[in-house]
Length: 394
Ligand SMILES: C[S@@+](CC[C@H](N)C(=O)[O-])C[C@H]1O[C@@H](n2cnc3c(N)ncnc32)[C@H](O)[C@@H]1O
Image: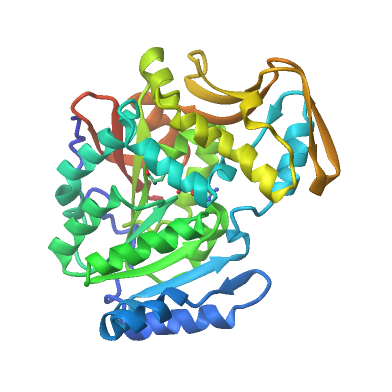
């Protein structure tokens, strides 16, 4: 564990005006929902939760109470297949073939990712959970009064539960804003959380990060803790990670904080095992992108003719995931009227996971005008969780 000495009030300078407001009320939530409904333009669509109707039949009082605590909005790019056609056409027509990793996360991919989190080789989830479990009360202690916890790429929100519990224990109530491209996972986890935490309010946003962050900027909110876990920042190239954090920074007021989970640089063998497990779960996750293309773009990829490969590129400090063609072959995508030719051993590069040293984490944050106020590592020193404040303009 490594903790910075800077205390929670270190940014409370007079030029950092804190805009505080009372906790949201049911009226506000209903109002937000109505506004969202009125915004049913091509750019924003609100979907009423059918789960409410189903569960109302089973337990009317409970379901009615839960529904009042849930707002779910679906932004225009919320379909996890949004942009898939163009991404596939462009990525597979290149000399070095690529596919964007966001397309891993359809319903099946999100489920497989949950299985990855339980793998013995995938230390990331356990290490981050350990830090959160040990530090959640301390993190909640940085916030006085009403707080909104915003989570980017929230997935199943499993690890976030300890944080939610710590905030509920300290403040009695909490507004949680999970944002994820995977709408099914978002809905399922929101329902589970509402069932388990009666004092929790959820404003769930099904959207791509950029559009979701823009939506969050529009919301009048109490003090925010923005959470980005799972080392998902590592999926961006280093320069793109900095631009992404600048976008997050633009969503923060002076008294907001960012909690960022980042995997640390480590030996190649540990990384290779983590991204190429013995049970072949990560291989299934990687190949799911080809299944999606087969289903959604009428493709004829033969999954067994591609091998999952995790390559540690030590020079740039990242793990690359590839799908390598086992033979020379041609794949047809009817929906795109496209034939793609693969040489034997030719790869599709599907994901990067960049690793950071503590110094690189600070550099990354500084490039986004963020200042580290605390940092914790797990007992094996494999993973980091850092708390950042916006640099105050003087
Ligand atoms: C690696 S998983 C991490 C999930 C969870 N935060 C954790 O730490 O276990 C990445 C999550 O981000 C979501 N995601 C990936 N790309 C996204 C994007 N461009 N916009 C919004 N969500 C995205 C995925 O659906 C998935 O739930």
